Image (tube, rainbow, N blue to C red; front, top):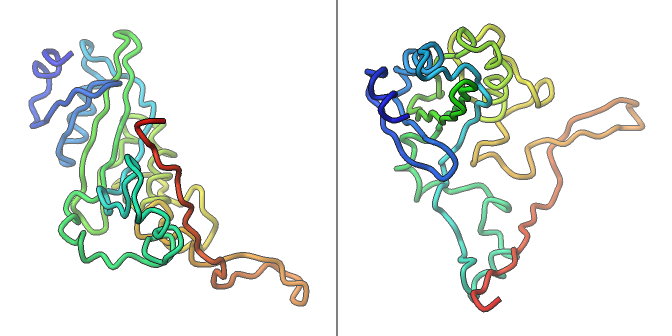
Length: 217
C-alpha cells in the first residue's frame, strides 16, 4: 500500500504505522487533492468514507496524578478544586500548544482491496477551518456537522453547516477541552411560569477518583 500511495500522491505527506491501520498525515491545503486521489485512483479505490471525527489536543499530556503506582496525591486531586472538573483551566502551562490544537481525522475503506486508511490533518486557524468533503462523499455532511457542533470546526463550502446534536441557542462547543464539564446553563420546568426556562448551572462539580493500577494486582 505504501508503494502505491507514493506512486500516485504527489502532495507532501507523512505515513505512520499504527496497530489498526495505515495512517497518513497531510497539510490541510492538500486535503481535496489527496482525498480525490485516494477515492478515484483504481489502484487505491478508497470509495467509502466510514467516519470523520476531530481531536482537541489543548491539554494533551497534562495530568495531576499517576495511575501506574500508588501515590499520596491521587485522592487529594479528587477532593480539592485543582482540576478542570472543578475550575476552569488557567492555561499558563499550555499556551505553547495552541499550534496544531485541533486535528480532523478521516477514515476510508477500499472494499475492492480490503484496505483501510486513516488521514489526519492539523489546523492552526482561529477559528479552525478546513475544506468540506461533501463534494467527494455526500456522507461527509452529517460527520462534518457533528465536528462543527462539538468542536467548532468550520467546513468551508459545506452546503448546510448547522448544529446537529446540541439544542437551539446552545453556546460553546462541548467537546473542547476548555468547555466546563458541568456546562454553562441548565434547563428546568418552572411551574409558576408554566414553561421551560434556562438558567445558570447550579451543579456542584465533582471529580471521581479512579482505581489505581498496581503491578502486583
